[in-house]
Structure formats: C-alpha cells, structure tokens
Image (tube, rainbow, N blue to C red; front, side, top):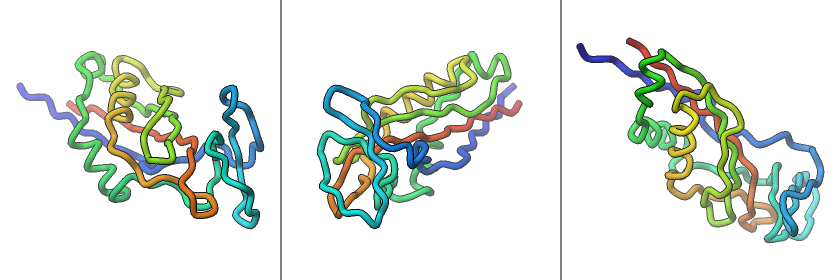
Length: 151
C-alpha cells in the first residue's frame, strides 16, 4: 500500500526578525542593526541588519522557493510513522553574497522534521542579498517550513 505524502510551505519568503530592536552584539565585531530607510548610515561589513532597505529574496522569488522545497524535501520516516506534522522555524544569517550562514532551528515538532528543514536551508542556492544604501549587506532571516503528512 502506497503512502501519500504532501508538503506545504506556508509563509515561504523570509520573515525578518523583530525589526526595531536596535543594536545587539552577535559576535565580537558583529552587530545587529535596524536602519530606517530615511537614514543614510555608513554600511559596515561586520553588521547584521534586521530591517534593510531592500530585503533579500530567494533567486526566482516565492514560486522558485516553493519549487525548490517541493523538489528537495525528504519527509522523515520517523515523522511519517508517528503521523507528525508541523512547522519548523529556521533562522540564519544571509551573507552579503547571498549565502546561508549560521543556520539553526528556532522551534519545531522534532521527529526528524527539524533536521530535514535545516538540511533544506543549508542546501539552498544563493539568494539575492539584502541591500542598504545600494550595497549588499548581511541580514538575519527566519523561514517557516511546514510539513503535513497525509495517509
């Protein structure tokens, strides 16, 4: 008997982390910055922005992101056997070149779904980077990846 597995991705594109939080240290020389669009502050290569003028985008947009997830998903056997579904939130830093860095699971139902969502994020192709004052910058991102199994 063949099992039917469906995958849904809800709110696919990047959800920026709480804008307006100000500055916080995320490393010895890195800082998190929320820059209002009306201010022209110098762009620092060590800064991690949470509210850039131009947000990052998966190359090809939302439809391409959905297609990437659908093509590459491997629903974990453990989750299938236990009928586990849910949403996994993966946070990461997107570099100024569009590469995923420092990815980690913020929350999720477990049973292999967290690991699978993290694998999908690490394997993503480069994104179109965020920009401040026309320059590409590092940005903090969170993506929700939803899993739904149907039998």
